[in-house]
Length: 96
Image (cartoon, rainbow, N blue to C red; front, side, top):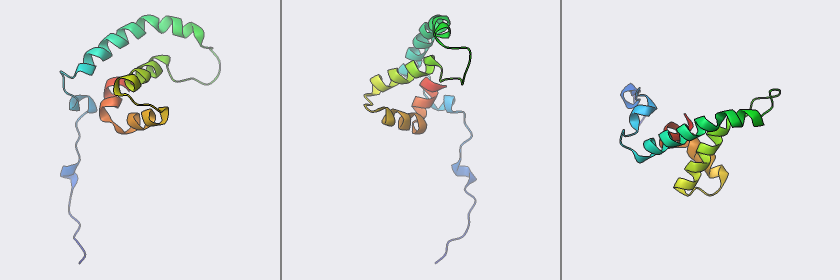
């Protein structure tokens, strides 16, 4: 038997990803500390990169992703990239 088309818009959520992660999540404090330290190093990072050519991924994002890899015991970088694409916590806390 063929089913009927039903409106399923109630299944979709329009809440910002940042709101989905608990305010008291321990990684929020770690993110603050890491971003503070990386902000201090930003000038040094800037001197290491050429002013010409194609823009790279910011080193702050790369280092944050590596910390995430260590915290969660993600071994291959391919799995890290998969987690960054799929795991909302990874995206909100570390990459954005």
